[in-house]
Image (cartoon, rainbow, N blue to C red; front, side, top):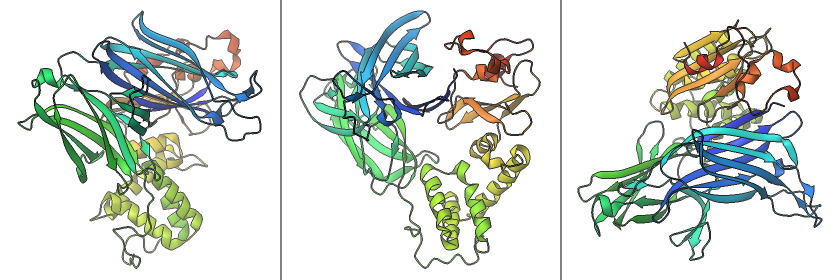
Length: 493
């Protein structure tokens, strides 16, 4: 049985959503953080959170309802396994009458020498064995005993002081991780923990230095004046820190949290950054607009209700999560004034001085997407190829294969640079053949659909084969004559 797997890779965080034809989605969040122990060396902490409402629950011997997942994690290099674990993670027990299924959480620690590894992860629902996720990901762990370097930055859900000997305690702090990098409207604090190593080796013993914490806009790289602080510290083998930013007024958007360690000469000798996303409710009347704002003589003034609905819907490919929700609400309101104000504010956010300029450019791209990727029933922006085109722009390479033997028509898009990452690829295929609706099958871009068995899905013959005839652990399809899928994906032309 093949599964549709969606994975969200965000730095050291990814969200797994496993979906089969016979079950609902299973949601498992996995996060990895790197640290260094003076006695035992580098280690990786894994944080796994499971949404209990997406699992199958059964009655255990004590008469309570319980669910569980089987987890296998391997850190390998070539044929050598450096650390591994196979275990079952149990949910809390609940009464049979309890409707709300709790989310449950687990932390594990793996000591490893500094090296580049292949991380292999397998997760399945113990009570529904066919609901299985498996993935491989390159993972680098680089620490030594002399270089000043930051650990991973660990976002926190809660924290406190503790001297207990338990896995959540580091340097006198009891730390409960925050899973993910999305901070919604109900979260007003950005709290995080980290460690800085070997400052006594790099700049001397008992020397003073400062660590600057700041937030920058992810797209523009501009630092925010109201979100920057520094702290004086003294060198040591391990310098722990716990910092909190009040983000009550931080607008919706994509950001980087930046940490910089500076010596007495104000020179940066160690730095790191981590991405996060903020969602704060948009107000129809915001700081930039008064309640009597006039849209007279603006480009939205004469749009009809139907046109406004259409224009707002086609913004989805370039909208953040909050804008998507807000767009849905203003359309449901059926109030033209709200729609006009939302549309105008959307483009003012992109260009305050001339909002019509990005609007005109984007609408030309929407028409292009309609012409190239639209179908008889879907507009271009509603298709997978159209959405990717509008969100990321025209690909640097578009490698089309409509007649390769043994496989459905497919095409590979390559972006030389995408969101500060290089060489990101998307593979689309057309299993319907008679339509222009191509489906995004797999991508190695952050936040996109990932399916490590995508080659199997390209095979035209796989529908006619019994699941028993194939090894579900394989990630490669059969090599048909004239079919060079792997080579095409690696080096699209």
